Image (cartoon, rainbow, N blue to C red; front, top):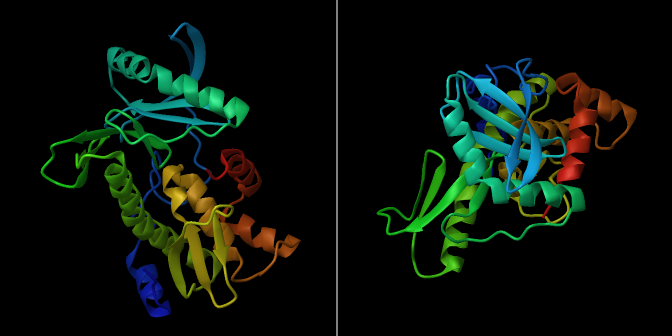
Length: 265
């Protein structure tokens, strides 16, 4: 799963900034793009008044829900009907309330691997479908379809393998995008399953990124990528190091706080 220096350099030449755009962006660095059309709303879910931020985009084809330290954010297609929005919110009411309460208590919610469960992916959610599918696993729209093989363990293994499969090329591409901005050349980019660190970088130029990042919004993935690449110039956390980070990620302090609030599970 490692890329040689030459492979990474080739990717730097062939992967343009728009090759793997952050969700909700129009290319370039996604770290600072804010949506001025964000709308504050409220909805009654299971008897509780829930406030949320609504963002509309002409590039979206589905409704996505994200919960972080800022609360609930709903992203939806520009001209999507209100009825569809309400249907999604009511259908995910239990999940929304559970996750919001989890943020308040910081208590981790155990992942279940049964049909209808929620699978986090790039800051949004996929609905897990377990059934008699022709393929072992495939993503179809907002669903992650996994062939039923008789146990939750098989489903878990399929999904975790899928996470690794989609994570590595994305992480390599984001490193390829930011490396020239920081004037660095990583020797390799690989995955890690560390329990306490989102990423690491060695003096030999090996960058390791936690596969759990694939569950988070891409702007947080990008922050971790920039952070680790910056260590190729400053192998410390000195003021000089943070200046390198800031050169590609001026909002690093805000993103760093958000990432700490997420925590590894």
